[in-house]
Length: 298
Image (cartoon, rainbow, N blue to C red; front, side, top):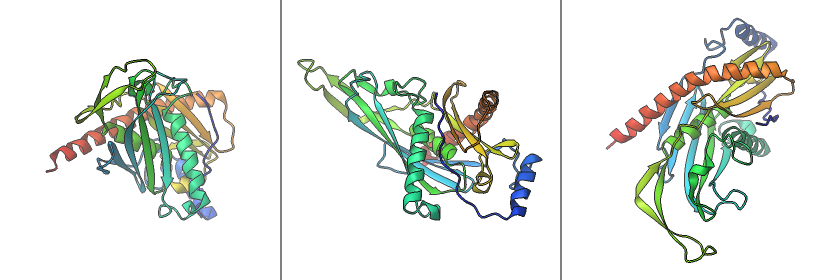
């Protein structure tokens, strides 16, 4: 589990009075929009939004709006990990979401978000601790595997992009069907395996171990979850912790210059675990409702 500085907050033009008002509200556990410090904004989930993908989802957290799609393609396992498939995560920040996303600003943030998501969801280089299990993507050891391409788009940004993107990826994976594959043995070990990919049978991707990401943002002396852009502009540091249904920490990343004592990190992990249970329950409920709505459509 590694820690890395990332993603400086977007500059939001606030007067001194507005800054003090926001900080004062957080200190009293009553934020600008009426939420408590550890309360998320309402979350909205829509699945199956990109028909040509194997799975897709749109997630809205307040005014933050993102889409994730999953495309599965046959590939060959890496020589270093012959018993695993591969997962690639890419993020694109639409210039319409934020003026600063135009040109280099958007490219830099896209890269930083992609790296942060990989650290949060894919574990270390060995795949150990991964929220998305690469071993589940293997078809034939050393020969054939599934490569998952997870493409994300930021449509609108009002803070807490990483948590929203993590939720969208989990929802998109829940919506993902992987074609059933039959492998015909090659005549020799050097030959490429011959595979039959079904057009009719699909296996549902197992998302039971896929975590949610909980970002704790420090404003003044307190931590808050699901920070808005205004709140992020006042932060001194933020720690993003990915936690799965089993309470397992799958990744941890940090941004902001302020250092953190190890005991504070442990306390934050404890808070993140508590908050993640509520977020997981709400997200799973929204995903189920979205999938039911898809099934009911003519």
